[in-house]
Image (cartoon, rainbow, N blue to C red; front, top):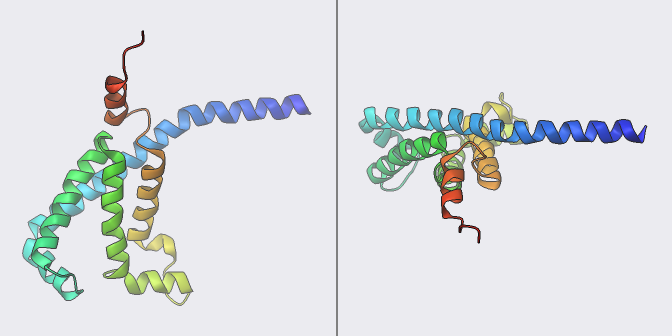
Length: 158
């Protein structure tokens, strides 16, 4: 029985060695792509974005709309490439927190309290925030520009 448990544990470790880098890659690419699209959408409809930001009480709506739109594009590209992953995950997380406190507040509060028609997984900003938190904590993974940069910065042995 002990041997079977050990074999099972070894199998799980092997799956983790392959699964974690793939999970990080897929999470980065999907999330990064989504941020690029939302950032481009905000820039393409900039006047409406500014109006919306103002309507939900975001101060300096035009400046914040420009900042967030640009951050979503640059951060999205960074996530796709796995370049600056932790930095972009932190910055983009802050925009998701603001979204949860403003634009998505009623949906988020309703999901938290069970009084709304949606669950937490229906609030996109919350789901994005969870994935961003995971990327911040775990990093970009093996298949990333961050990993290549880290290898280049390591001192040569000897």
